[in-house]
Length: 290
Image (tube, rainbow, N blue to C red; front, side, top):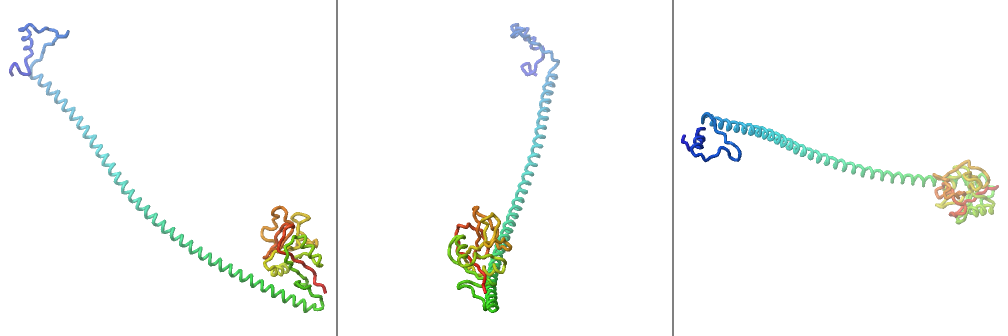
């Protein structure tokens, strides 16, 4: 190799310095160490070794990076597979939900149709029952009216010598009844009956009640029952206590804390009312005298 090449013998710098005599042995306070290498081959070997180590380190780093990249690629692939599976499951779930919603809608339609049919059947049956009940009640009233006519005829035949009821009064089972249609209070009704030799009606049994009900003509009437003396202790105008009653449901209720007298409504039921109030009329009763 030429003296001007890269590698020189270690002695060459020493000879150069001796010849020129101008290069100091220190530079900036530091002494240059003279090269003591044995040969060019050793320096070259060191350089190759350093390069080999560097390449080895790069290979190791590259291997690690490739390994990491491979692991990340696998994880990414797993994530993609999982994502695909989730999409498939989500799609299947949506389809199932759509099927369920469809079935639910069909069931709701069927239920609504069934309810409508049941409602129609119920309405029809209710109307039929109400019609039958109305017809039965009308027939019952007719039967009662015919029965009372027959009974009155029998009384007239069996006791023809007896005095008849006054004009405008009705005979039933030996008693005469007058349905007065005048809107007055209870005390006036009581006094009016007494002035005619009678009293406000006293109802003793269901037969008498049925007779009175059949003649109400859709009116309300005072009857001879009250609890004026003792609250909730009802007595008749002749002093007798109740042995029979025909109260309307939830009556007597003493609404307003002053309902001490009693009416018979248009359906024949009893209700307590204020004595000072008015109603359609009252019923007088007196014995059929022979």
